[in-house]
Length: 62
Image 1 (cartoon, rainbow, N blue to C red):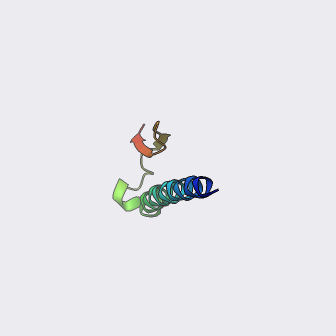
Image 2 (cartoon, rainbow, N blue to C red):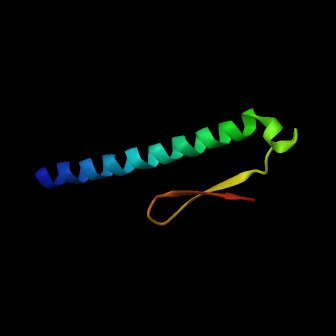
């Protein structure tokens, strides 16, 4: 069972890191849409959120 517990701890750590990245991306998007004066009164270009093979998240403009 110690190996199983260790695997769970690693998985939880990975999920915590992914959650932090998602929250940071969400905060960035909220900031972009909450201040239209930064974009001459128009909404900003949408971004595309993609997940890399190692589970990291990447934003890219469309």
